[in-house]
Image 1 (tube, rainbow, N blue to C red):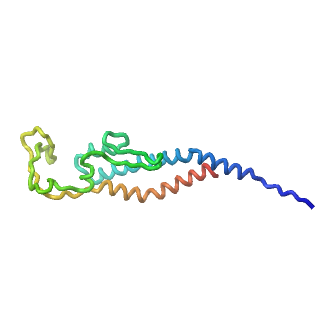
Image 2 (cartoon, rainbow, N blue to C red; image 1 turned 60 degrees about the horizontal axis):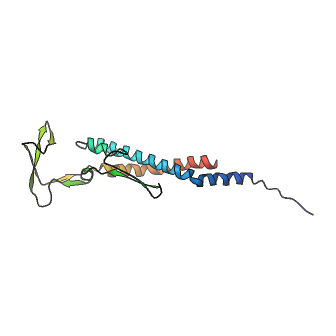
Image 3 (cartoon, rainbow, N blue to C red; image 1 turned 45 degrees about the horizontal axis):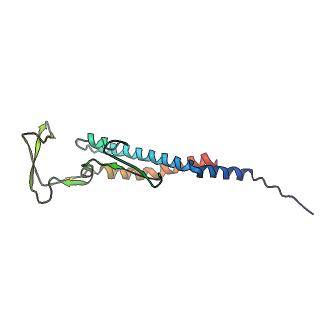
Length: 171
């Protein structure tokens, strides 16, 4: 006695075809686009934290947290799967972390400039200025705060994106 068992492999072929398409570079390109979006969202959060924490004279600092700005750090590495963002603005770290007003061992120093209301304007050519006594200026921790916010957001963003990819390639 002979029997024939017919197996419909069309669904498996379709699944493997979708898997091959995803592996051929589509998924990697989409992951790079997603990572780019996460970086832009992080920069937006950093800017909001700078505004909320009322960082003094933040124009240059805010501008440095825009993608492709002069003082911006935006590096895609590891074949597009690692993103580094930040600022090259010389004082960004001091504002975030805090700093001493003078270098070690210097009790006071003169800073040339002038006052406009309650705001001091640094001006190297000014005849007047102010004397800074040595003390610690507490950091605003805007970058650290933005990292904490992003750490809380990222799991939900990744889960939603992975579900979108699963639906696109395998539904």
